[in-house]
Length: 77
Image (cartoon, rainbow, N blue to C red; front, side):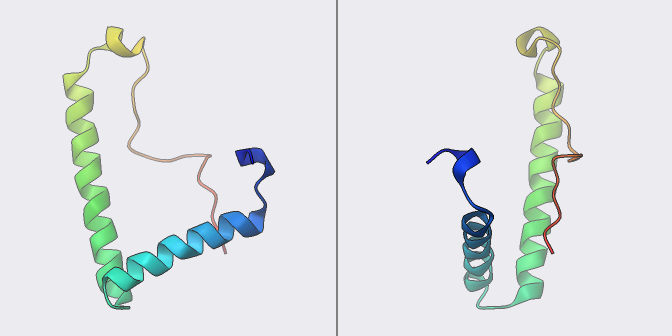
């Protein structure tokens, strides 16, 4: 099944499984889960910033990674 053929329900179920796994890792403590995820985001942004400094523009043909998400971010309610 291609990504385009996946239903919204399947995508939601996958997302819900990831949320449940993150909460289970912290024994159901939502605040600890959020703190860990924010710390992970901070670490990955720092790693991305280091990678941006280290890579040359010729290597990526002018492309540069961005630390902020934009239009591709879809809010689920």
